Each structure stands twice: as C-alpha cells, then as structure tokens.
Image (tube, rainbow, N blue to C red; front, side):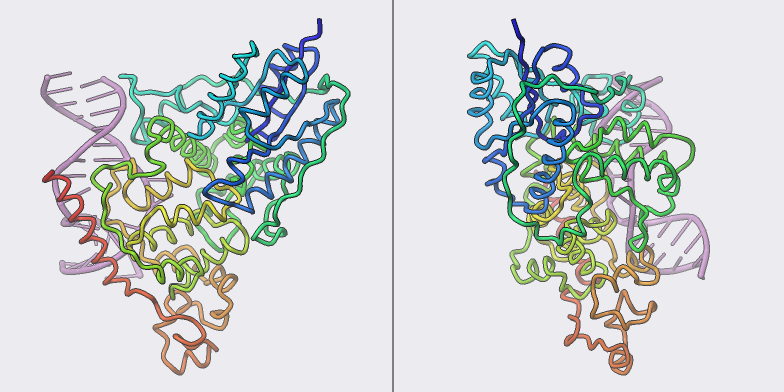
Length: 468
DNA sequence: TTTTGAGTTGTTCGA
DNA sequence: GTCGAACAACTCAAA
C-alpha cells in the first residue's frame, strides 16, 4: 500500500539541509509539499508588506526547486488547523512533517494542527532546522533556562551538532502540477532594495559572504557606511539557508568569523529566552521595569518614524528602514535607544514599527534587541547606557556617507558637522544649502536634557521596585 | 551552601 | 587628545 506524507513548509523555504523533507522522503512513497498562506498571520496585528512579499517570492522559488525534483507544491489559504487536516484527508496522507517553529504563535498553531490530525489517526512530526540548537535543548547545570548570554554561548559551543543533510535529488510527488502562488500586496520598500528572494539567491549570498568578507566582520560590522555585514538576516528569517549551514561555512580562524558565529548564537539565545518566557513578547523581561512610566507623545513618535528627529544618524536609520525594509544593526540600536531613552516612548511602539517594515523581522530577535536597548532585557546592562547619537554617528559613519545617502537635505554639510548640523553657524548653513529648522528639523529633544530625564525615570523605576 | 568570576554593542568627566 | 574611573551595585552560573 502506498504511504503518503505531507511536508508542510513554513519558515523553512529551502530544500538544502531540510531534515523534515529528508525524513518524509525516507518514510513515504509519495511526498506532497504544501505551503499555507495563513490568514491569521496575513491579517495579524503586524501587517508587514515587505516580509509578505519576500515570503511570497521565496515560496515561488521553492515551488520551482520542488518541481525540478518531481513534486508539485500545493498552495493553500486559510487556517492551518482546517486546511492541513483537510489536505491529509484528501490525499490519504498518513503523516505530516514540519520544521519545528518555536514562536509562541507557531507553538499554538502546531499544537492545534497536531491535535486535529491525531483525531484522524495522522502523525505529526516536527524536526529541527531553524536553529543550530533548538531553544529547549540547552539548559544550565540546574536544568534552568539561561538568562545571560555568556553561559548560554558556552553551552551552545559545547553541545553536539547534527550532520548537515544534503538536498534530495528527487522527490516522489503525486504527479500533480504545482499550484499557482497567489499575489500579495506590493512591498512598501522599493523591490530593488530588498535582497533577491528564494533559496538559490540566499545560498549565493552565503557562499560569497563565507569565503572572505566574514573574516573582516569584527572590524567592519559597526560601520554604517560600509557593507560589512552578511545581509543574511531575511534568509535566516525565512529559512532560505540553514543556520547550521551558515555557521559551519563561516567558522574558522580569526576574530571576524568568531564574532559572526557569536551573532548567530545571539539569534538562538533570544529564541531561547522567548521559548522559556513567552511573556517578554508583551512585557519587560526585568520586572523592575514592567511599569516604566513612558510618555504619550504622538508627535514625537511620528517624527521618529518619519526620520524627522533632527538627529542625522537617527533620521538616516529610520529612512533607510522605510525605503529598503532593512536597517543596519548598529543603526537599529541607535534608533531604538533614541525612542526608548531620549523620547521615553513605549518600547513596544518602536518594536511594532520595526516589525511592520523589516523584511527580516523576527519576533524573538526584534524583541530581544529592543529589550536590550531599552535596558529591560536579560542583560545586566545598566540603564544609564544611553547612546549619544552624535558620538555614534561620528564613530560609525565617520565621513557621514550613510547620513548623506538617506538624508539628502544634508548632502552639502561637511563631515565635521554632518552629525550635529545645528552647530553650524547661519553662514555655514546657507553655504551648505541646509538651514536648520527650514530645510532640516532642529533636534526635537536636547541630548543632555533627554539623557538626564531618562536616567532619572529609570533610576526611579528601579528604586521604586526595590522598595516594593 | 558559599564563594567566585563574569557580565555585547556606552557616555561623561576630570586628570 | 588620551586614559581611567564612575555610573550602582546586582545577578547569574558554576565550582
């Protein structure tokens, strides 16, 4: 009797190093790949056209890879707990294979699907694939979750790894042609700024990165004006490349390779934190800052979103995000620090804005990054670390090329004043073709005042929580 | 149980 | 311009 298995793709849109796909092929005579345009996600609280577009194009690419190997991708729309069991019934499948998804929604969704399948006697098999080490496989000697990165990283380094799985040469399909992929809304970023979707393009990016540029990562990664980062974030987000593959190609001698692998481990640390503490998606990890008094200032929030704060490096960052669906890692910290510390706005407003635009937007990483910057996260990072946007700009964008690229009003400003153009005299402003308050906004807050205000508010919150 | 070393990414001030 | 201290003591993880 023919045994049929379904492989349900989600955020693992690849055929290389795909343990679930490989397991299905080994276990079944007929393998039916499927992707579901999940209405819960598409209509979710964070509409994200850039991410949906990138996903749609990557699904199309996956469909091509699968077809070339003999299987037509089914494309469904609806609630997974309805459509996956329905597909299993229609095709007579005995098993469903997936790559394990550790997000809170993914856990709920998969539990519901597994229960619905079990009612029909159909197996649900989750395999690793989105992490080098799954979030629940590492623990302290006491069996507790890690709450500092250093110890997590030591355990991550020491844990045994599985072997990479090659892409299958052939997939025994059921003879059905691939379904058409539905159209989605256009991205809000211009498509030529979004990296080419699909596994093949992602593997090219990885191959080029791992040969040489990664070796210079430690030296260049903070430079806003250089292409010193891997640009693999959206590929990891959608599983176009396997994190294990990324790490094993990038590993080697030198600070660059070591630091880059450590960044991949950070991604897994934040997944670990979210797995063990799903509450961080909505509240501060550190309970002392759970009720931090944030300001209600829609005008300031709007200025931040629009890149009109008057701080060039912050505005460049925010405009890069809007224009491209991407923001440099260091720029994310600078922009997030400005929202949480200088403007004292709710961290979650910034977090949601990032999720709305980032092609690589990932709940665990984005939340972890925001909590770190807001000083509410796992680290014992003191709250008095407030980024100075002028210093950060001077240090990480020394000639101002990043600022000039994204804030054209400042193109005529000299490198000496590009990070603090308000310090130009009236004469200099006219010569630079940039009058502060007319061509480019004056700073919406004073750095020294805002810093002092943030330190006071955070200090009070911490002291208040200590008193109970 | 107690001790010990460690802890992503910063800024400011004064010598 | 450079350098170290202060910021504020605390918590974690392992021995």
